[in-house]
Amino acid sequence: MGLFAVLTCFGCEFLISVTDPQIRCDRGDGAACDRLGDQYFNGTGVEQDKAKAASLYQQGCAGGEAAACSQLGWMYEKGDGVEVNLESATSLYQRACDGGNGYGCNNRGRMYQFGWGLRDGKGDVAAPDLVKAVSFYQRSCDARFSVGCGNLGWMYDHGAGVAEDHERAAGLFRGRRRYLAHPWKSQRDPGSPPR
Image (cartoon, rainbow, N blue to C red; front, side, top):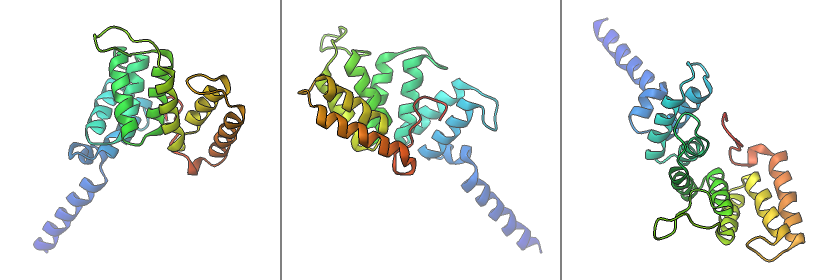
C-alpha cells in the first residue's frame, strides 16, 4: 500500500508537470510560455498582467516560439504593457518571421514600408524601403497569413516597391479571402492582441 501511494504520488507529479503550462514554460517549452503569456495578456483565467505577459513572451521567444516573438514585438511597437521601443519591435518581428510566423513577417514589412524602427549603418533613422517591405509581405503571404497577402496585393496594385500589376493584386486579394474563409488553413491570425 505504501509503495502504491509513492508511485501514485510520483505519477501525479509527472501528470502535473506535463499539463501545468508554468512548469513547462520554466523547463523551456516556448509554446507553453506563449500560451501562458496570452492568458496574462488577456486576463483569461488569471488576473490581467501585461508586464508578466511580456516576460512570458520573452521566455517563449527565447525558447524558439516565433508567435511569442511576434506578440512581444507588437507590445513594444504599441507600448502595451512595455515602453514603446520600435527597434526592439523590429528585431522581434524579424526573429518571428525567421521562425516562419506570418504575422511577424507582415509586421516587419510594415516597419519597412513606413520606415518605423529602422536604422542605417550609422545609427541614423533610415528611410522606408518598399522593396524590402514587399519581400516581407511575400514571406507573410507564403506563410498563409491573410493580412500579409492583402498588404502584398496593395503594393502590387499601387506599384509600391514592385511594378504595378493589377492582375497579380487581384489574385492576392482573392487568396486573402480564401484564407479568411478557411481560417483552419491559415496561420493563427490575431490582427492584434488579444488573440
